[in-house]
Length: 179
Image 1: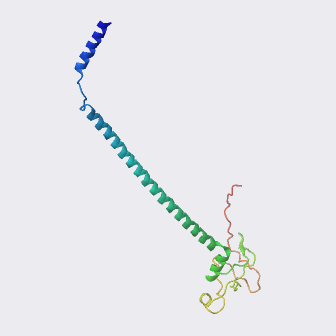
Image 2: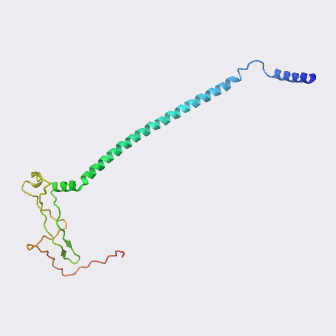
């Protein structure tokens, strides 16, 4: 066994002669620089990622605040529209413009006869609306508005009149209602 130990010592001795003796700093320097560069690059990329996330967070907060403000404004505008659309408000503004409520309607039948009694509507002051000099001219209620449909004014006797039939009868073309 001594001969085998000497051979091992000989082999170890030869290997030891191939390896440089003493601490080798030249081989550690590139490795240390590589590790430092990797750590520095990782920290810088982490800082950039963190600042990008913070910027997105600030932008998101700003957009949420703007959304809240616009929602509040939209709700206020909807309340204004609702208040202007109330029947009392519509009636008051219509009276301010000189409009009067329509009476009972009269209808013109296809054969030219009038169903109902057309009557002229006059403005009567309502208890809610106070007449003022600017809308009525200071001389009583405003004049009756002319009907845009050209309805026939009532006759002096108060009965509805039918127009005289024309020389050529007019017929309406048949309509297809899908029934």
